[in-house]
Image (cartoon, rainbow, N blue to C red):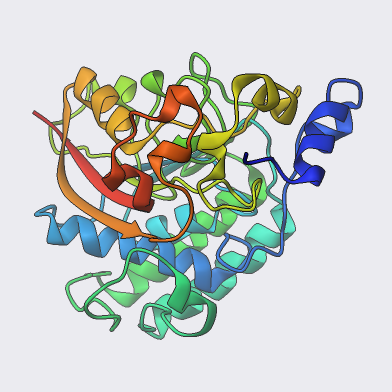
Length: 309
């Protein structure tokens, strides 16, 4: 029998009575958005893979659900050529002083045409690229024009004029969750990722060239000893683990995400799985999850780009 870690169960149970336990955030996550290098790496990986999928240029508008510790990914998008950035979250974990510092560091990375970070902690980042050199195809235009864009972004952040950067938190779209698609209570209404994204609802009125780019984490987020042990927890225990928290894993497997994407007229045009061969197999899961395929049960993360059919 698979049990949740005691700290997770205790926090979820206590959250019914203690409001301060209903949200949590770590600013020292090495692969999170608390550092300029992470934000730079996240955005350029997504942009590089979008190009590999046949999408040239930089998206004119970028929206991100759950930016995390900073809006650095969106700032990287703006410096790369995007015109507007929307940061959407249930809880605003960003800090204006941190965002300003990260902007300065990302600006320097762009000025230096720095390679995409891939060493140290960044070597653990998924998905992988074939080449981590500065993308020569990324045309930033004349230097004076680019420096003017930097000044515009910095001024907009300082004045909160929302000309190019708009942060909305709390943000809800039906029963939207937090940060990533694996955390939505009702993911059929929303698709998200760790960087550049559009939701299917927003895509309804947009160009066929607008595409969701998702990095979906199917692990238990360390809530169980086994990396995929969340699929072995029965609903009664899961209710206690969740408590009154506004977001937690929805426990949808990848096949379910694809079904929901298809319902919104979206189909994958690029898909890369990160697999693990330890952990549980479907026969070990709770009865409601035993139909999960062996392929999905091994998928720790999936990077997928979707397109409207």
